[in-house]
Image 1 (cartoon, chains in turn orange, blue):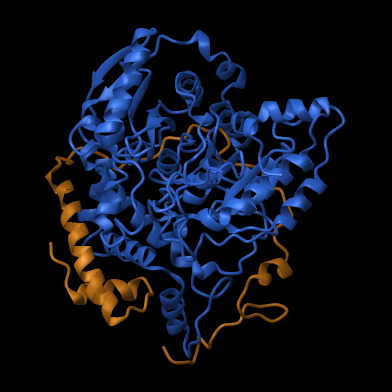
Image 2 (image 1 turned 90 degrees about the horizontal axis):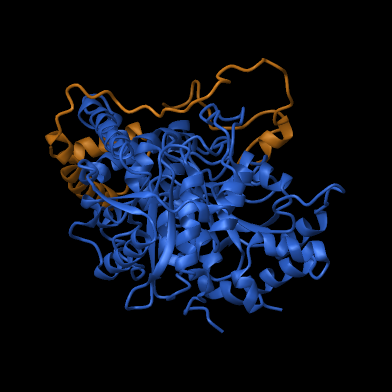
Length: 98
Length: 490
């Protein structure tokens, strides 16, 4: 299959990545080369093969719901680029530009 | 004082013995490793966050329980920068996490602490563990202590280089498709990736959640087993940890009573594309093991040639989802922008490096409407075939041997412009990752250029004990830990 520049633009939007003109050219070319290699999987007969699942033996899939201390507010906010005493601050979401 | 010559061959038990007898104190030992690091790391650049004060603090805070000697008491261990260490930087070598200080400890770190380890800094890596050479670090590349013009492998290249250069006796890494084993091979150290679910991933920054495993890198096989023994086991903070007893260190110590292993050599792993010196080194060693009681079995893993294609669909898909959290809101870098949407896209454009962007793009594509069946689902099914190949092989053999890497360390820049070429260097390590199997890389010699060669030993699920038993034997036959890397020799 052939990846077009339009497809790369669509994917970049889904991934919330702003790309430069050079990156468009580079990733269109590289994604095509990588997907061409990946296309060898299409030669496998996978009709009756289920998707892989990690098999991890365990007995404690459920635990008792016991309250325990988590991160306090100050710790949770400490790494944020912008915050006040209570909240993370971001550009306007509702009523702003889309 | 630099690290004295005999310490290069010491195990953690030797250090503990000296502490017990009172001939050495953890302060002196850690001081020597700090000096060694200060002297060599300007050239090697294994450490991304290096703070000798923090290391000295960690030694000062050490307190020994009155009733015994914890397994890692006073042993410095370096930590890959994608494992959370409370109060210390944790950036995954990414610009998007610049300045991030982990608010809590990963379970593996909490267990090292309980065993008396000394925090010894955070090691460089490919950004978010995406790469095979450590050149994708958002900060600077690390160099191979055997030849400073060459890569240390990756993505745990900083951990491998630090151990190889004698800056620290041990380090933690993480392995998604070979990121512990391959740099271990290229730097001439021991690197273990345990079974998926053997070590808690709580506090390991997620790259590809169905593949990520914390692993151990050391000079000695025994140290590797001790550290894995400490960090392994069930953890209620990680639903995918296994309720399976952790292997016995005594059984590893008694490796000499187990010599009749049936060793499988997959013919697909010794086909074209393998360095001649690596092939010869493995052949010679296997003949020696056969003469001493092992049975060597020719086996087939027919789907091995499909492993790289399968892996790069699965890992990029999972990565595109896991890395969605880096949006500039709660932590890390934030770009200036007028709208919310623009802030997301620009923050990610500025914060991620080229390989991370490439993988997010590929993974987003593979999961997108109209392509999910053809790519993600196809790869998930192919992964089942690869896992079945191993299950079938382990019906007739105890352990499987392959090279760890098709070549020894390459020069910086050599594969940087060709992502596919870089991906193909993971051909031998990716299959065990896809199947969730434990696998170790053990150094077994040098090629004609004097660069280390690694042998990979793969075991059935949760058979770390058996892998270590054979690795102890291989180490006795090929005591590579005595070697001092040529790039940093005094």
